[in-house]
Image (cartoon, rainbow, N blue to C red; front, side):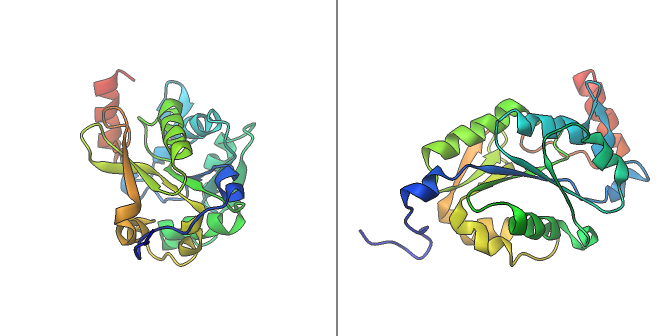
Length: 213
């Protein structure tokens, strides 16, 4: 069989059996919240960063949370949860700093990158991604809205991991997804679970009004 330039490496059984690790990217600055912190917004009585972390833990996968050095309330919101907390000293340089740092400490194997500020994302959504990857561990998976709009989370197989160390700026893994587009499989999640992103107080007010929160 002839393999193209974009084909992933062949996998041994050991690589396929490596557990999926979840990395929650929660080191952003919430710059558009005008002094508030979107990860501390309360939904169903739980602050967002704790809610998304609990959803990740419900999958049974090991969870690492990337945190900024200057937001102690985010760290405090994770009290009692069995997660690895990783402080990102250079978080202000962009999303890639969190990905690089987490990539360096998380054991080898596939990773699921989860943005911490997606209020619609549920444990069922994460398990759906987990299950889809279990059926094909060689492909990159990217969640989409029900209508097909690309969003998050993203699952990266182990063969992508070396590229994470080279990321720069605030675009996350976008360059990797573009580079390996033929190897990206889209997974549709319900409604806008993969794409709802609330960056301002007005966004949060509108979301609460529409959902009865």
